[in-house]
Length: 615
Image (cartoon, rainbow, N blue to C red; front, top):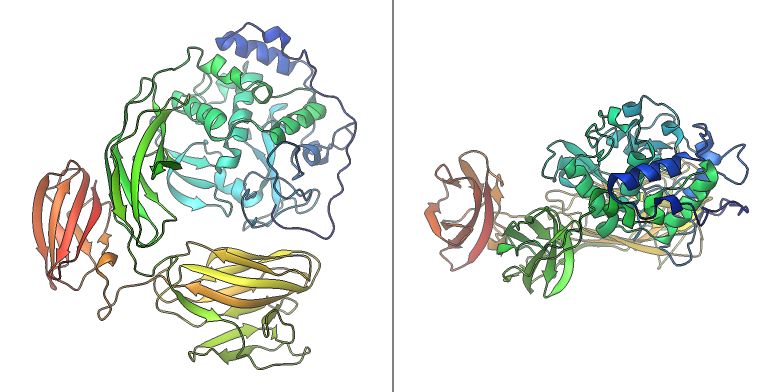
């Protein structure tokens, strides 16, 4: 977890048993479902059923502390390291590359009721316990029952795992719930972040193997097909093998967890120790055929920092798993669909794209055609600075003053702080939020009509027990967090990217801690996210609404007369029309379902191409 604590959890390293060197010897020479059955015998032999409560700390078990041993964020020799602070390693809250939104220490904040992420943690059954009627040993099997934030666990529910096409909910670390992107399943699925997809896939493969004799009855879980051999529907095993081999292969941290799980209950996950077993069971005839090359790649809809890509799907003898997106010949992104919005680009820059397809075993196609597009230069996300408050205009007050405070910045805009003080400084003056009052301290900005793209601020803790976060809200919606260190001598500067909110913006920064921290804030700034107006119109900001379109009209946000030419994906002109001040839509009744390109031009010689999807 990305928060450091003054009081760290002391983890005792205890001499304990390791997985025997000959543990898998009886499986040698087997393939297919015969191998799976023998692995069932191996993992059932010696498996000691533990109580549900022993998962938390291994109470009463010699040589094991349960989750303390298997799911603690500790440094790993030769593996991926996060913070190494001994907090709970939770697949749904760990941020491997940045600040974590919250964390838990072992033995504290066990659920209980929860209403938001960070309230409490509990035990997540990766295979829902409703499918096996909460029976033992499945209910307390540490290989598939993992510590999880209670709120995310609630949102995942009993959903199958898979790749999400369109998310309807996203956790603070990026785990998603939404519509299925897999051919063969049309329901709602849950998708963890890439860092832990392999961990979850291997836990499910273990469950299908360890409980082979009864798993055919657990069909309320939508990934299981009611058999004892294959166990999974084809779409499900394709996803799991992809996550296992391609997205998140086994690392040292997981090997260590497997050893600790063996100490806890006397059996191991064979797919951690022998990743090759998965293909030997579910794909015994290796797939050596590459997918066909993607075709008809089109780059369109440029903004200052993104470009849309669409292409025609590849075919494969087994199935296409995903597409690699190359920018200037460099493999930069991966997606499972046939469209993608490339993020993080630089304004006013030309980019050239190509695509490769790959299947679940890693076979790659050749490159698609190349298509190039230039980003716009409108000062939107990542553009010019439109607010910068250094707090130098705040009247100086004594340290005993915690009253609400208003002041005007150099442009005359009024800022407000609740329970604030100004006697503590970072660079010259700063504002210090005090969390000890009847309500959390807040800093509220004035409204800025140009919106906000990204926000930057410098923080320094002045009083209180631990590190923490200040929450950043835009229009009362949480958009990110600003972390501060537990060390009162350390300043932390953080940028929250891709906020991208149009319209009036109100930023409220709230100290959500309950132990009375004081946190100083300085050099608060943000870049603007430009909107359209009648007197300041930028042609590149034209948008199509709705898009995709299911009915007969597509509206264009314009105050100009426009000429519209509609082309199909192969570049053939389909129709053309005009937009007038009293007619700001085009009629698409005659268009069949598919992807179209609209070439839009005005009488000033400006031109832009937009992608339209007709459903």
